[in-house]
Each structure stands twice: as C-alpha cells, then as structure tokens.
Length: 298
Image 1 (cartoon, rainbow, N blue to C red):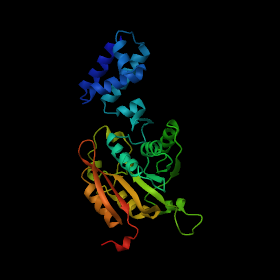
Image 2 (cartoon, helix red, strand yellow):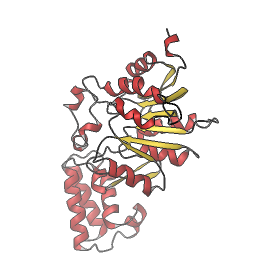
Image 3 (cartoon, one colour):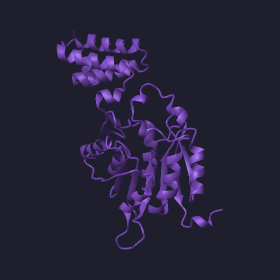
Image 4 (cartoon, rainbow, N blue to C red):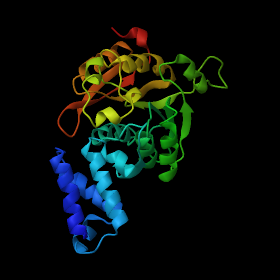
C-alpha cells in the first residue's frame, strides 16, 4: 500500500463513521503515524508504506471512528502555538481558551509591580505555560487537584522550557490558602496580581448529554455542579483573599453563563466586570478587578 492509498483508506473509515471533520482528522492521523507533514504526504504519495506502520494508522482511524478523541490518539495538541501532551485524565486544550490567555497578556502589557499569577484548575497546564512563555518576568503558580492531570502539567511545563510553581489541592477547600501565608505578616496572605481559571462549568443536565468525544474526557474537569457555577462562587469569594487590590480575576465560562458569572463577581467585590466573545462570537471570558473595599460596594 502506498501513502496515497493509506490516506484515502483512513479518511474513508472516518467518513463512513460519520466523523464530521474526517478529512482533517484523517490527515492528522496519516501525518502522525507516518512521521510526515502535509506537504510530504503529497510529495511522497506514491511511496510504499511498511505493513506495520499502515496497520497502526488504520487501527488509529478505527479507534477515532468510535468517537475516541483525535487529540488522545495523537497524544499531543497545540495551544497558543505551543505543544502540549494530552491523554485520558486531562482536559483537551481548546482554541476558545486562548481568548482567556489573551486577556491576561493584555493586562500585563501595562507596567505592573505584582507579576505573580495563579492558574486555578490548571489541568494540562496550557494556560499557565502560555502565560509564562508570553509574560516576561511573571511568576506563575499552577493549582490542580487531580493525580491524573498533574503529571501532564509538570511534563508540559518542562517540555516548553517553563518554570512553574505547582500546588496539588482542591480549589474549593479554603485550607489550600495556607500555602500562601505571608511569613512576614501573621494572618496575611502573599498577594497575586492576577487569578485566572478555566474551571469545570457544565451543568448537571449538560453532563448527562455529553457528546461522544467529550465523554472520554475526565468528568472532574467538566462537572460544575447543578447549575455549572459552583466553582465561580467559591473562587470569586474565597480566592479574592490572595488577590491584591485592583488585581485581575479572569474566568472562562459557558456561553450561556457569562451574565451569571459577572453577577457573582460583582457581588463578591469586583468592579468593571467585562465579558468577551470567543472565536465563534459566543460570550466566553469574564474578567474584573478586585475592589479595595468590598464593604463600600452597593
């Protein structure tokens, strides 16, 4: 079998299974399992493929045909122009999340004294790593609770030549804030200039109606409680304790949740709360600034 025939067979397997992006997915599988890029696939279309390589590529296509995520099959995915290792146990980075990264980078384009950033529910580390790579001088802390996701987080930071601080723990647990106690001021916390988070935000109803591909991703990284908002309530209220006055809090949320998340932030003591749209024109990112005196808000 030559490369042209193998590529056509892979795409036909996917097309017959109803995979909407069969052409793109088929090309990705062929490129990955043959070790070639798109141009090389065309230039070497008549080159013979070894039986073992052909068999593995076809097996990968058949697995994708069941709905198994392409990103898990490849074992990697790109986010913000950077490579990330992914697999079962970690959420797949998505293009819309790049808008969240853009928001934080834009904030730091103006001179800031506090260059400490904390990424809550860090998962694969895609947000933390992208911020560290694009904000010179930033000190980035990544917080993740999952024992399955943590190895991906550490690996991805090292693979992208970034140094992060890692904390394993549940952001819903107030005891985690003890990790940020200020050694020079008893009872006080070390302050961050920015808190960023893409927390689990699917509702109970949405969790019961997951698409096949999404169903393979870890439930802990998707489930936001009955109304999908439990993480926003806790982070906006609890974690503001480690955010400096006028510091930035930036979230990703579901496209129908942004108004509710904005209301949560305002009630928790944040001002100038703003919503941004994603690449598809849906409301996706909500950000605001910590009021120096929450009690003065009306």
